[in-house]
Length: 197
Image 1: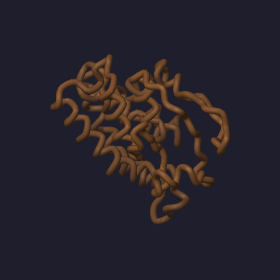
Image 2: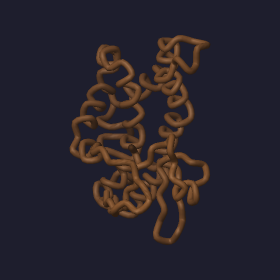
Image 3: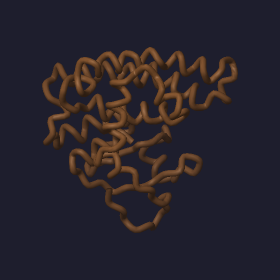
């Protein structure tokens, strides 16, 4: 989702091939044997198969709204997204799929994740967005994961003591950028007509 947000933000047209992970096309595995999505193959043949790297690629090509900003701002974004990807996402996965991790309850895993929610809420108490008062790559890099977390139990999320995080979350949830990437597409098959995103 964050790769799509960045590509859409940058106004870059790419050929979209929707993949069902339980039925990975051989063409996908040929260019990225690790078999995860997203995978972006550039016209040069170079393959980018990490979503955060795709965010950097897209916003480096076109950043008309200055999501990147200074090198210090990009560094701050990388640090925050690293916390998201390496700590929060693990707690999110355990919470979302608690039946696969029966050592603890879903509530336990949710509590573990709350340290990151609290950190984001503190940042958003000081600024409108995660880094400062303007949207950044950190916002589009982290929003999809907060969305996943919130929708495990949206009623619980809405009553949490994180008012600034909730305001930020609703801002992105209702944004034109987010709604523009949420169309459903049929799973790609060899020979299918080209679909531009």
